[in-house]
Length: 288
Image 1: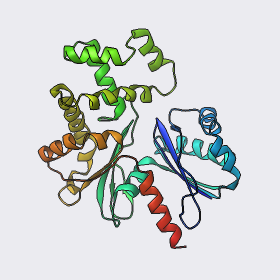
Image 2: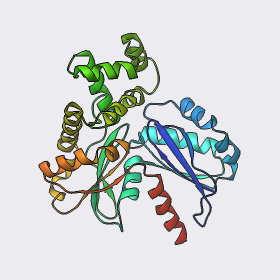
Image 3: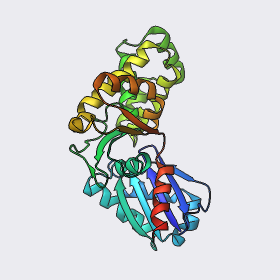
Image 4: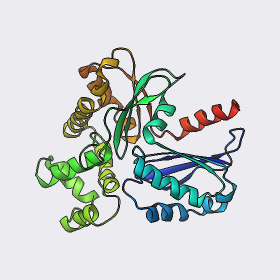
């Protein structure tokens, strides 16, 4: 049994296939497994919670894991040790989520700039063989423009600074618990504050007819373009820019408008990379 896993900070999808690439049972979903923010005990606890994974853990021979927070060696090795300790019969490979986005969006190994806009955000250049990054992500506090947690932070700030239109303030207050102590508890004492912030981003997509929301999305994406996509400005005349992640998928119209303004062409939009990962690994299995 082979597990192919795609994890963000909020959710983690697991798909099991046999050596012929045939899916063995329904997709399994756990909480996100981001080793940059979770301790080894927290990572293991989230895996152990799932009865399906527990049932099949000894039958797994290969596990291909792609995840947020796996772009630097320390967190990647931490998660690698956790997975090896739980799936003791499996060969485990852990790679960063940008590689999953490449495999899910790129067709026929064509060069492209590939972006992730989900709970967090990132960007890479794929030359047809290797993925290249020029900037290491420092996470949600400093970076992650145009991500779910970025927009959640903007919405909360605008609400409390009175920059949000009054009718939206009423709706925002009805939808979320905005007691300052509750927000601070979730930001500073609960695990996964980035996922907590990202949970507010849904509000944007429920109110996209509002100029305030559309302007917020476009401004966030312009900042992401300047800081991340423009790392590869010399490539943009020749290759498309692909996108993976729920924020990108739900913001296609705004992203295309910004792309036209800022001089690059958009390519594919994929909400969740897991299906593309299954196709990629199934094709690889067929070559053996």
